[in-house]
Image 1 (tube, rainbow, N blue to C red):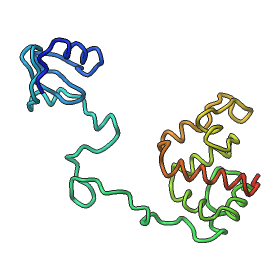
Image 2 (tube, rainbow, N blue to C red; image 1 turned 180 degrees about the vertical axis):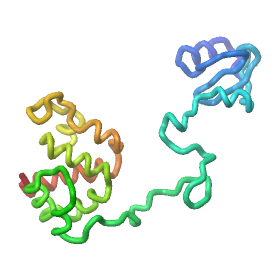
Image 3 (cartoon, rainbow, N blue to C red; image 1 turned 30 degrees about the horizontal axis):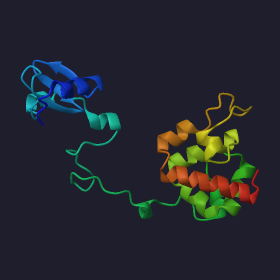
Image 4 (tube, rainbow, N blue to C red; image 1 turned 90 degrees about the vertical axis):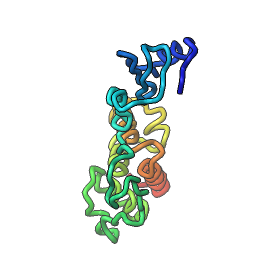
Length: 189
């Protein structure tokens, strides 16, 4: 890519896309490029690539050059059917380790068994549900979008940290919401 117009370079610098410039080497949006003193920016070289920030590390994902379990370079999709259920019946559900109060846990196991079993197989889901039960939030608004201060949640942080660690569009977040709805419908304490 050749940036010949000074306005292009100025815009990219102001926007933070051109991160570094030293001896004609620029980092353009995480892709290093080499140029001649900043007058034009050409395609990347091996020397310039070493100065670029590691975008994969910043995103917390493996770079394309990584080797995965199958020996290939492409990550395999998550196989939900390979997740092992942590227990097979309501008694196992009730005995499962959780920070949720036992009366609430027993009610959820009796009335929302399938959802609870799926959630207990995913660490993030357990964290989100335990947080919701601990502070008393009951839906996406009170747990995440507009949490309010309360005696159980004096900072009004809700479960934002727990939900963000899983991803607000994750299976764990969706399951935890379904469990909270089932808890309300079943009138669990």
